[in-house]
Length: 316
Ligand code: CUA
Image (cartoon, rainbow, N blue to C red; front, side, top):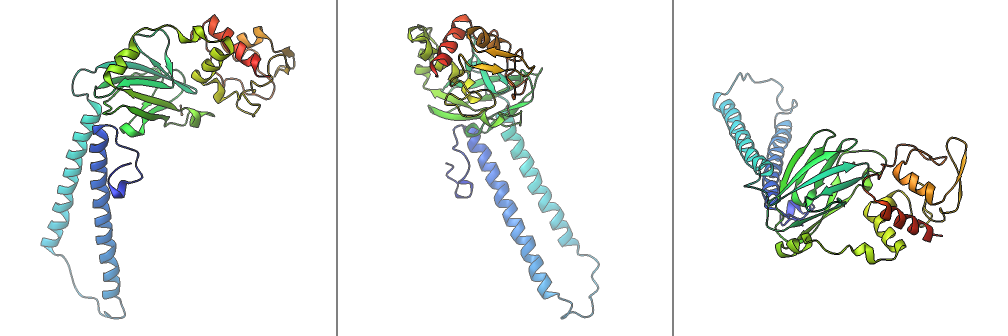
């Protein structure tokens, strides 16, 4: 939490920018409170003091030059200070101090964030891993609709726009974890479009980057599938416990006969599941909306899909 008592409800300050930003914010807030009290206070006093009952004949006042100069010049100076200060903070937020240590490409989808690293073949889903104490560059875009990439603890937020690459940067000071939000309403599961920033020490980060054995290879298929379902946020829409969701629950799905939107029926088997993962709109179950699920073609390979099917099978 912020140390500033009036700003106590703001998220923690995990970057230097956050401190700069909050200081300016506090300045504007206190200034507004000061002038609010001054103006409204004077108003209340004058209402009483100059009430018609006590002043039956209005006085004749045309103008007061010193007073008019004061209320023009002082606010102009304050405005110029707020502008100049805001410009400096905005510049610090927008322009990294030097070359960035790592640049990560981020793509927003309905409804997840894919983080593409140069050293990895597949993206990390809803997880951004970065080193502490180094400037990190982000290039943000969207594959479908408007999203907004927002890390409150870092005080950075920019829209992810289809067909446009938007640059951002930040430097997290300490190892730790921070939430990533989507801050632009982007459809049904907008509120579930959450991610995490994992800030590691520089040594841990370099260690994390080194190629290592595929851990999933050593897991039993249904366990590997469960990890994939979490990683790719499948379970955000398809519950594992029978609860209703945006998509049919995984529980008891395998082997079931489903009525499709086009009036036909299908038995849920490996082939149907595979097709639904790669072409989600081909065979929509009755009562569900088409266009809700993105395709996972090119993101999941055959082994991944088999593991996912094994996981769904295990949820009887
Ligand atoms: Cu993506 Cu809201």
